[in-house]
Length: 94
Image 1 (cartoon, rainbow, N blue to C red):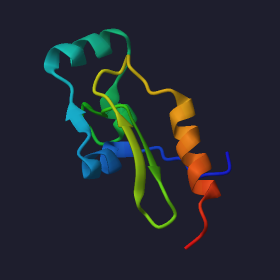
Image 2: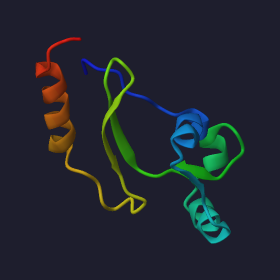
Image 3: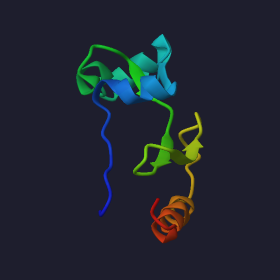
Image 4: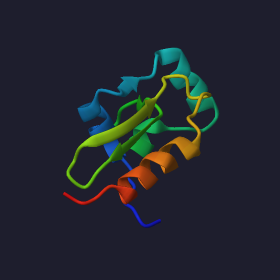
């Protein structure tokens, strides 16, 4: 891809954007039954996850679009972000 993407180990960025949450104990148990260990995946011993989100941030650090929904089953259409990216690409440079 011709743009930078982010993998947020330890949820540091999610914490900074206020979109990280701790799984309730009953969900931790369900995850463990499926062999999912977030403490290991997070690398920090926590059972924290980010709200599924997509941010489009321009080169100047300005957030141009946000799609976030705590219901992980509802995801925004990729076309929405593509339209924002195309708009940024077409915009004259400052």
